[in-house]
Length: 486
Image (spheres, one colour):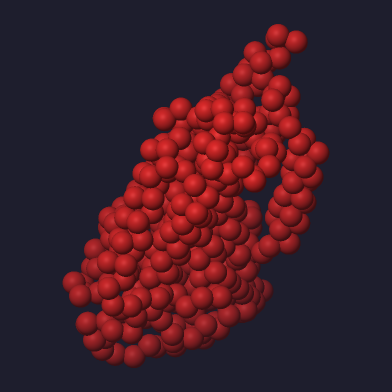
């Protein structure tokens, strides 16, 4: 079947087109669902084509692994709540990096065996049997393939362990930060050691002890790099590790000679890199500052004291204020996700719209715990896309807004980002909620946000606090608004 390799390459090419077109469609909320489906079809086509590679072995084990993975993904996709999507994305992203690192490990062990250093290792690679040289034959990995395999393994291992820490933080299993004196120096030493060992492996000095040391250093560096990062930086961290995973997959695809892996990895790596830059820009910080600046570590030590007191309001007065307003802007945050209040919020917005109130939703680029978190929640509730505005578009409209309703957002509406140079979030672009004529904040209590920074907005003269669970508080607003219309 001389035509089979050509058919497989054609399938890979079609899969690559589906990846790229799917990613393009994901750039708009209106077409994002279709984009995910297109990319899914591309991945299915690439996987099926791979099974027909002439040198593929252990198909039974691979099918079993695929079935286990698909079953776990299907179950978690159905069961995991929207509030837990950020940590699920972090976990799945880590699995991709771990898979790339595992491929690199297989290739390095095969290379070492080909050098005659690992005679006891069985010749059972299901991925690239021809690279497992036997009987003293020279290894088939070229110097370029070996170097890219080591680099992909390093990046994949860092993404794997770092994503697991990000998952644990978002899940609430770890403290938001872990810092100690000399931490940056320790991290740099770990990275330098991993690079040195990687260079030894890439220059042909492969042995099982050296391979084990290499992966131990890479995994440890991923852990240590992520532990000191504050929770408010998680959107950037998730995007960055997504880019790492894509690059690792692309490098290992080159080693395996698999075009689908190369293209998919490059697309994911490029998209993750661009998204990371956008997230960092939205926080007015460099990626290096995110990784090494210990953002959020200054929790509870804000330099600028905040005068005044938080002024409460009840649901009846808040409902009346918005019922007779001309313009209302609703600002969702992670508290809305925790309370699963998106459906109630949209019900409340619809009641306002029926009264002739102009309603918009304002989304900060890093609101929630991952990029696009709030957009997904609002889309799930059925909010029309034309009512959702980005930060740059909505900020000029706040001075003409009668009421800004903030639900669970904290750091992304904190005026200290503009007024206090000593604040950890100083310089971060925010939603200019404080410029609205009136501000109503729905909040469970008087605590600080995820970054641990006090919010000056809550003490402003034009701000009133509606305390309580997000869904319950909005439910009260709906009840009071209906009573006005009755």
